[in-house]
Image (cartoon, rainbow, N blue to C red; front, side):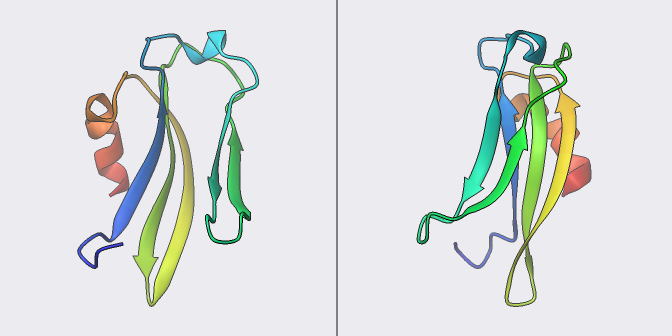
Length: 90
């Protein structure tokens, strides 16, 4: 990752506009590509009329990276739609 990148926010969006109340057994996960180890897994349960979720943030800390779970429901089909909801987490 280039040195000027100090944080990454992960989101899940329903590009079709389908709400999470209509999605069953959905999850997202963060995997270390080198080892295949699952570092984090979030199950998208609870339904709701939202079409997106701000899942987590990974940020530089010292010489490495740390992850912070967020799990905040949001509304939007793309990450650009979510920028107002993402900004407080930066």
